[in-house]
Amino acid sequence: MPSALASLSALGHESRLRAFRRLVEAGPDGMPVGELREYLDLPAATLTAHLNILRGSGLVVDQREGRVIRVRANYAQMNALIAYLTENCCAGTADCGPTPTACKPRKKGASK
Image (cartoon, rainbow, N blue to C red; front, side, top):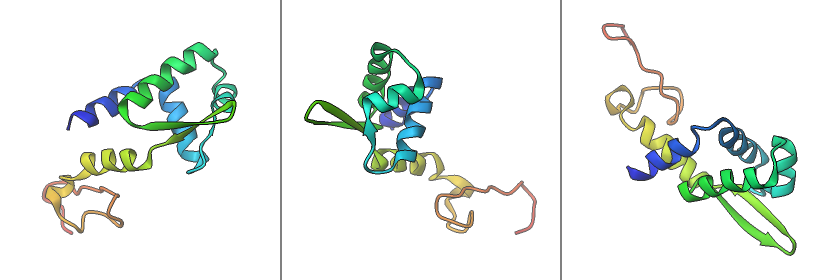
């Protein structure tokens, strides 16, 4: 999955990971870029560069609202990445963890 590589690469930088986690926390309404910049305490140009990488990976989307640009986490892409990373958990058995997204592999030879 090439998009998994792009997503993981994008999240492989501390500032981008912090930005993405903050956007996930903000919920579907996202937040203005300026507010995210203040939270991260980054220069505007640096944040722009990081957001361009996150956009390129599909993990964030943005929308202009007048003079403000609102940026949001792309939950569909995030969930696709999580699904890709866990699709073979416990050899693909449905009873791997307490929820479909919880991968709790058992040690070999351990009883169920």
